[in-house]
Amino acid sequence: MAVVDPGVPGAAISLAICTYNRSRMLERTLKSIAAQQVDPAAIWSVIVVDNRSTDDTKSVVERWQRSDSIPGLTYTFEARQGVKFARQRAIRDTGAPLIAYVDDDCTLAPNWIREALTFMRDHPRAGAVGGRIHLDWEVPPADIFQRSARVFGLRDEGPVPLQLPATGRTYLGGAGLVLRREAVAASGWLSDGILPGRTGHKRLAGEDTELVLRIRSAGYELWYNPATELHHHVPEASLSFPHLCAMYQGIGAQWPILSVVAENHPPESVWGLGPAVSATALYAWRLARSAYAVARRRRAAEQRLALSYAWGHLLGAWSFVFQHGRGRHLLVERWRVRTATR
Image (tube, rainbow, N blue to C red):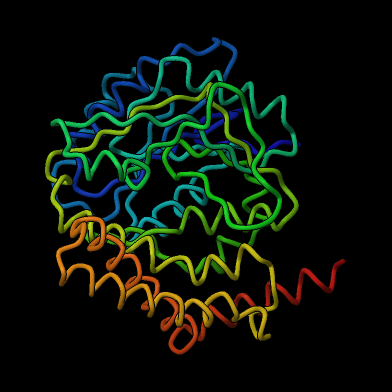
């Protein structure tokens, strides 16, 4: 018997919007959801997870609830700061067999829900599916930001659905990520996810990629589906060079842990720690090279970004090898469970 959303009997998909102090953007996201062109037989719901906002987020949701234009719209509060905790709360507070993460700065194409349901129906082994993501710049960006578009969430792998590799490092963006509940449960992410993701104004990253890689390790397929299109709003406030450097550092810091998750090695072995340990020497060299180039003013902007990424990677490697005992322990236990059941 299929698990359904307790708030909306028979719900097939729940859209989860995790938000923190972005009520103005949230308003636009909810407006795009209200405009969805969905088959009348389809049953769907929306949950907004307020991750300790101090603005009028709750009032915005209540106003949309009174309008009765979004079916099953609910509001919940997650006191633990961090997008990972908010996303986990969304899964625990809903029961639909499909969950879709919709960022609070995104607007969905009118047929988004219909296309998501169709794709998941036609691909029963798909555990996680990401879509085509366009960027809406609030102001025209400088070239350095255009060249860093993927850091801001751009995702376009063409007009044809694409299954992602079953090995190695890969990712699907958290914006518009459609998940099969059984795949999330099998991944173990709800109980032992390591990376916290964006926390308040800290530009951390990677919790969505960790989830996706864990789903793949549990035996499910990962897909890119261009039919689920959305637009990601990039505000002018994000188009500062220090902010971009912070984003590169946050992305760099995630990869030592994600490398271990992606390669599926026992983390207590030399091979398991290898991605994190070997990265130290590589990125120490890149750090020194980038610092030298910045000092000599050679392509200063690009080298500063490389410097930020390398520094973040070193911090992530150090944290995982020497400080993240809990993370290593969880990965060890996950690997032992998998190998014991093979």
